Length: 321
Image 1 (tube, rainbow, N blue to C red):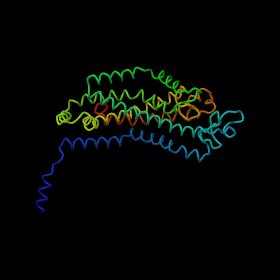
Image 2: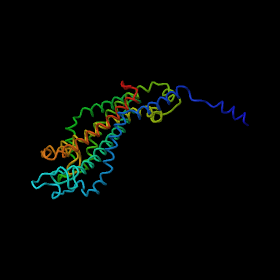
Image 3: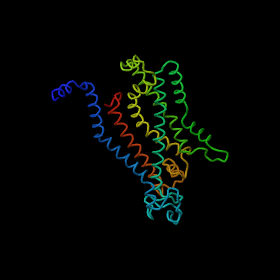
Image 4: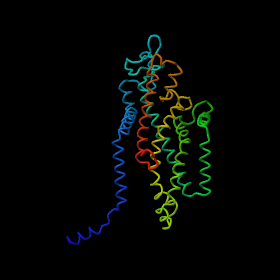
């Protein structure tokens, strides 16, 4: 029995050198990425923003100031100007007596929710279009590529203004939650980049031997796309998701700053920055402008650091490797 077991174990197939090399290479790149100082700094910054967003309700409960609660008696001075600190207001208050620190934390929830949701929708939609266009080819590719080019031709701001106008009811109220309108607008201008990226990768993969082998074995288009092509293009799409995410967060802040995104009194960093500049009270209460601006900067910097290092480590098309 011992001899038979030994012979059986000797006949077991071992992974090829190429498979071992790819596996070891992937693990070594992952270890290098996790040890990268820029990536670590990015994760720390992102962690701070996420922690602030999660802890926002707890902080509001501790200080007793809700994000929409106006406390003019406590937050405004005798001259009617907002205080810059004290009375339980860590970063002071705005012109309406609302806690700037609490509103900044709740603004992180809005930015992360809009950015993550819109970028994920764009990833799913763009990947689906790119897979079909790249693999099917022919007239289907022409139609989908033309549709992508048309979507790219729409001006961002004019389209946003048009959508916001259509979202108003007879009484001037919003038909759909403005947050979801912003998500739709940002996703509308993001999916095209994923579609182009995935389409190019699929066209390159179609000529590979393993795809031809799958076709020769009688596998259908859907099975080939989902089991053979998608796993090979998804890593690059996910990396680009991380690259596109900070741009979409800036897109939400820009729309809110221009008054066509998240509307007051809902706390949004773009809205808070716009209100600070419109009233000019940041000259007396600097945190009114600095708190949302610094928070937005930290968020964008963190995601940019992580996405840049991830692309450099894992994207074979990146020249930074």
